[in-house]
Amino acid sequence: MLIDKTKKLWCPQHREEPDAACPTCASVDRHVSLARERRAWAAQHRKTPFLFEGIDMRQQLREFARLPAFEGADSQLRIAGVWNRLRVIWSSTATTSGRATTSSVNPAVNRIRVTVGPRSSRAGLLETLLHELVHVSLPHEQHHSEEFILRLARAAREAWGLRVPHPLETPRGTRSCVAYAVDDIIRDELRAKLESGEIRIQIRIPIRIPIAPVEEPPDRNEQRRRQVERRAQRARKMLEHYERTSRRVAKLVGKWRRTVRYYEREAAKRESSAASTGKKEHHGNA
Image 1: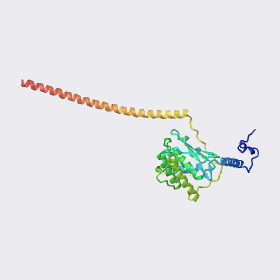
Image 2: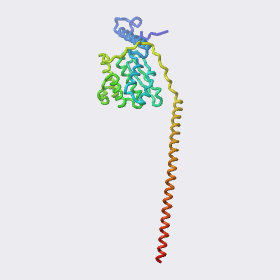
Image 3: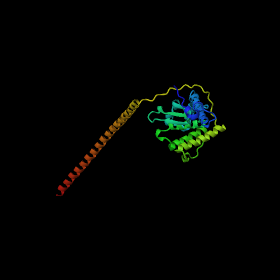
Image 4: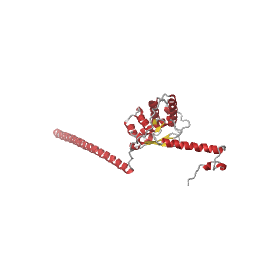
């Protein structure tokens, strides 16, 4: 038997039949209806999981990856294919948030997770995608470092023409770090430009997008085996290098040892000849 847990929220006098004129019943009724609308909103968006108000999230990540801010072999290796590993969570209560998962051993497991809710906006979603892509493009230990803040400000300037003056000196206010304060500046300016029409987001038809196969990360034993192979290969190369060096050193040591012995013999000959010459002179004087 299913129990309607919402009934116990109404006032005791109208639990069975809520009274619209009762303030308590009306307030509870409004909250229950809002919750139902939010759940229906989330269920509707789950049918097209990567589209939000015309924004194709995976396509946006591809476009962000082409920005000059992400140039460089290391950055491109870290962000390669991350749009195929994007996970979108449609929540009935939460607002926009994101999380990047990175690995310094295997870049193929780098991924982005975005949470979207009824209070989400296009500006917040775009800024969150860019923020998480900057995380993926940098080493794991960078986190919200100065390099992260500078790259985030540069990417926003290249993507939307937004300028954050002196990003490293941005007052963080009530935020826990400077990076989040820079996020707020970018989000507010981007929202203003979207509302004024200076920036237009291409509206995409909500169709079912085939999801690319995601490469499963290898297990820890496989990672350990690959690491041992790389280190063994490195050890063999270093051994060959120093064996060649030791042979060259041995030849040089032999050469200079022979040279030293030659000069020692020559010095001994000079000393013996000088000693014999001195004796002859002594006998001649006698």
